[in-house]
Amino acid sequence: MSIFCIGDIHGALPALDELLSALGTRGPTAPKLWFVGDLVNRGPDSLGVLRRVRDMGDRAITVLGNHDLSLLALAQKPDALAEAKPSLRPILEAPDCRELLDWLRHRPLMHRDTALGWTMVHAGIPAEWTIAQAQARAAELESALRGPDHAEFLAQLFGNTPEKWHPDLAGMPRLRYIANALTRQRFVHADGRLDMQYKKTLADAPTELQPWFSMPERASRRERIVFGHWSALEQVEWPEHKVWGIDTGAAWGGQLSALRLDSEPPELIQVDAG
Image 1: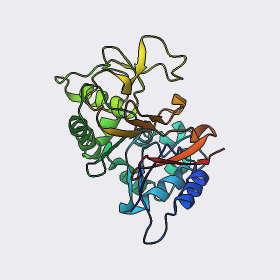
Image 2 (image 1 turned 30 degrees about the vertical axis):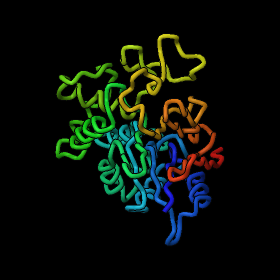
Image 3 (image 1 turned 90 degrees about the horizontal axis):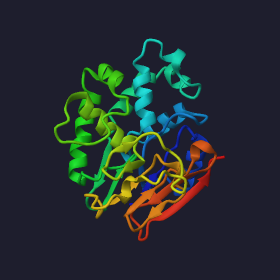
């Protein structure tokens, strides 16, 4: 069975359906699908994307992105509909809203297939963490998201501090760092501190910043990692770092990408999202 990883969809349901058709996702030989997160926001049909991916059942593996977490946090507010962006209001008004958000809240933060030799995460992995350590940290966040106090947890989750990992971090600061590292990071400082301000291209980046995946002695550098989140990266494959960034701007009228993980080299399939 072939395995494809699909980049950030951001509500671009027509592009998703075109890509799924190109991948041949029906019948007994239909491929396994991985999704790097950010299913929702910005595009024309976030509700339709949630339903489409949810209805794939066990054939689809989805990790949470920062926009997915933002939707979950928004939904806990008493004035959620008034605060929601237009692209998210249909989800909050849908008769199956509760079921969809409950399904989304139970998605993982990382996925690792040891036999295949690939790890999927939405944004990145701190240089200090091995893949196994990143999985353990992701599990901490998943436990909080799935627990009985998830509404209170989500209300405190967002913020830009702490900037740097330390094993002694505890409580909400620890969980906030884990969330930022796995779902929001792009650039880091030389000492590993996350930079949450600059989001544009490598060419225009401040000299003191570098992509998370180029950190020297990154503990996960020998593992193949596929991620999304970074449409301004302007390149998919970074062979010297063994990473593939497949957010190719579907939210901005670019392309929606799928990377075939069981082929050598990995095959890239794209459809226009404009």
